[in-house]
Image (cartoon, rainbow, N blue to C red; front, side, top):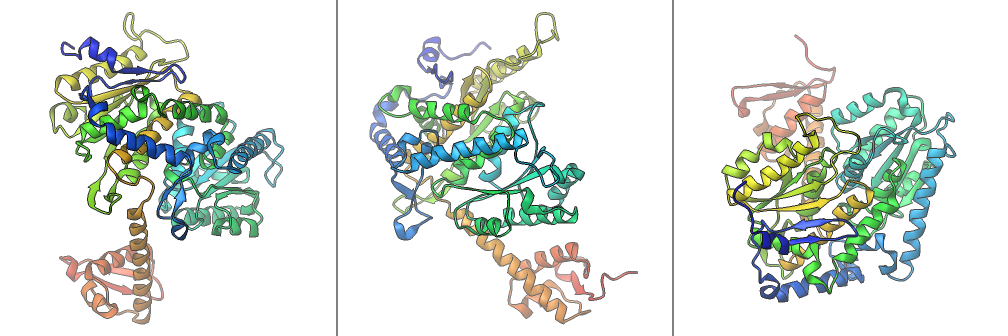
Length: 537
């Protein structure tokens, strides 16, 4: 540990807040000392933009296009006083309803149809509708939680079966929470239908066990009301999935799991307050964004590696992948110039990484900067000495400091975020720190962080594949016993041979009456439908 940053540089570049107790060490990011002057114009633009967003400017261009776009208001959720007139009261009322409903579940005032308490929670969602609750609940709950939790966060039938197998005979005491803003997200819709089928197979009424979190008048809202679900919690249309953890999307499952949502919101609000003008030198989110800009030359040329030294934060890198990459991965800037911007995020918990990819981080490609997340209190219980005078927590801190020094010695950049312990307040502050850094960085590089055209393109392509499956099944059904290869089928139905190849193999693997005969190369694979069932012999 011979080579270290200059003590004066470290002292100058360690930003410490007292409320929340959060430290940001940028001393090993090699940020030019005059950056606040050289980037003054872009910094002022970024500060103004975030101020305008909090004031209600419409910046989500993908939604309500005929109305000029939609506001982005996740900052209002932890400070309703900032919200436009009328919304603040609605925000406060919704938080009160979440707490009242959760208390009713815990006290047994709201019971399952068999008069048993709801002891299990099944959350059905995808992306931000699952990642936020997963992160918070994994980080903040323990053995004393009032409910056990399970997730359908994909449309993978094997994953769904694993969750249902774990629930076993507990469905009668399981509350299902279906989360979809539009109500039309296919993965969530599929999970809901799979859950409904499982309840019905067990002789249970799904609606008597189900809660919806969705937009007003959405397909899911109408379905829940038509089928007399336990309740519906309206989801704000001005909150995006990747920033929805402080909305009903995150707060309801957190409250049901016994987490203090008031403290969580207070932690986020405390960072919001610290990272507004005029104190630019003490704006941790802005300084982080500037560090990202310097490290990647404003082009995302280096990935951001997230290294939380806490098992409870094992999902943090996954959560930040969506928040950062979905916000910043854009083809066009605001003037519609092609820029192909983005910031790659990956990571794993420390000290696990010392035995995984730190070898490459130190000695391999210099294509990243690291972010260490330090939780200063390593344990609340008594610790044994694993070596004379040393505990496992001492080793954990030693590995963090050792890895940080090893990277610096090799000329690799890193920053360190430090909080005293992991609770709802400080997790809220950590999430808000990154949310605001993303907003500032997007403004610095002149892109819109609040739309996602690439995601919509993927959904359209998926729909086309499903249409192809249907077309192929119809063709095979009307030509029973006929053996056909991908190229021949493509000419019959007017589709690309490779698309037909993938669709045919998917059908052969998942439909009992469709068979595949594997040839010596893809062109020779033959497929047929047997209306009486799979061929034998």
